[in-house]
Length: 394
Image 1 (tube, rainbow, N blue to C red):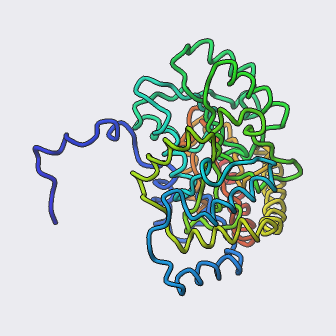
Image 2 (image 1 turned 180 degrees about the vertical axis):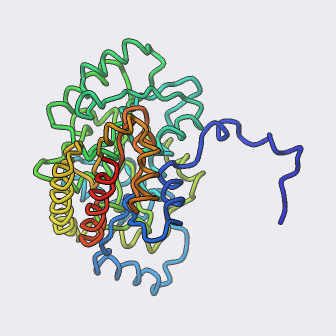
């Protein structure tokens, strides 16, 4: 097995050295070695891809659709994205010039940040937030401004944003919003989105809107900030959560044509183009599967209610999720804010895996995230184990 030459050991990208691996994946990997553990760590839907979507991927393979697609994705897929955004949000993006099909929403986030950021720029990120955002900003040579929202029901208010921008000055380039949010499941109401949009416009900023969970809301309608300031918005979404297609790696970004032209270059340098069978499946989902998430949403809402009731019964407080499929739970007072110790104790002694809240930034300290994108049987058993674990610690 080769070892890196000693004279090259410090010659890698130093920005990459400044960041660690994904905290979510690291915990999940470590916990996977614990016998009998129930994993509630990853945001991985336990449902199957709809049959008509799978058949579209199969047909693509059988038709020998094995050559490079256009870099921005097939026109049929981009037309599907346009169709979906019009039908669900009333957003009108030109498939020719304003949409890119990406390798998951992850690549869309990466391409967006690398397109707009220069060294010295700052990005405002309300925390807790998806852990991927922080290292990507760092690798791009910019700095994150983490805003702890744990004292405001896990939302960034317009007033708070205004105050942060006044403090940080002109070096702020963008605000990154993820809603419904990972890890909290909290959705932003229309009135707050409109207030945030005004502040963002007044300060001449971009907004990157990661709306990957927009199809999974409970009792509320998702309202995209692109409805208010489309000229400033990079809209990101995908099929991983809405159609349980995490392994297909299909996402997309949409925005003003001038910006998308630059983002297309970044996207092309990174991946050339997405996989053809995955694009065929995504196009089928977006053209003909707009009702597919409805039944999934009902299942997730039932599971959310079950987990919420279980936490109430155990005396644990959590953010009430109005979207996504996460329970973000405050750890017992006996652990203080040491969510890492709590998560490891629970995994090793209680056989339930969750992600320490501090993995999601400063606003997550003292919490633990459980994914309820798991079977009813696993969730029922996990709640029993959690209750027994807490009783042993009392």
